[in-house]
Image 1 (tube, rainbow, N blue to C red):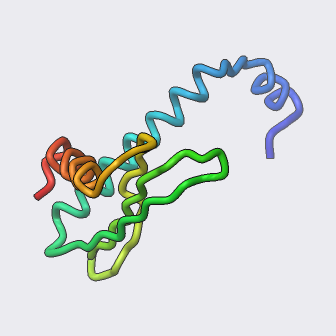
Image 2: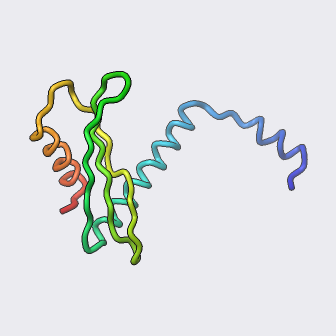
Length: 106
């Protein structure tokens, strides 16, 4: 499709780690905003909350949201938080509640 000279020109453009990292961060912010807007616009949503420990003995909180988007049910990871070694159910609730308050979701 493109000639070899175009390929060489593209290869000569340096990509720094910070550029790639910043782009990934920008994309994740955009995806999160899109999911949050879809949840806000929908008539309802449900959550699945999971607390688990990974292979390095770190606890994480995962919240998966299911919501209606243009007459189709969608499911996406809403949040993923690292947890301290000792936590209570109240800590889990506060983490989720904090996310909803921060993103103005009722």
